[in-house]
Length: 210
Image: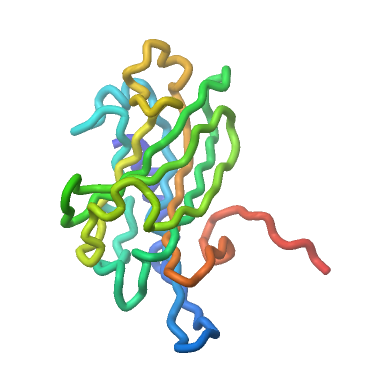
């Protein structure tokens, strides 16, 4: 599996403080939390895309690369199912030329229904840099195909072109490979707001001193 060593190095510093709680000062106060689902840095080549199994153009986040302290039940006692996910993609290296690229980020559950999994994503992007966004856990493709009380067993990261075709199928792979990315997903509970200061080893723009 490509990038396992770098993924492990990052994750080792994340798991212990991954869940951070703060009391919401609202009527019927509840606990608001966020946790790092995964934070992986990896290089992805055409060979990697052609040989990933069981599906091509996939990078699999599983085992000790996905937070072992993630909750089994995403609905209670903390409601992550109706919260948001903060996605941060840092494109560290990619071929010149600006060919738009995107990643589908797929939740693979311990137990699913219907299609059996659901995907959010980030992109398309055409240059190196940091790309971030917050996504409602109720808005992405097939989010209701996951039985959230049973938890998530792994994440599948799928490299695609602007049209959504898998990158390994392109006749011009030199426009996509090799690439090096750092992808981080932070789950934020319902009623709470993503706080980058709570994520270890993550650079962010600090407020100016007053």
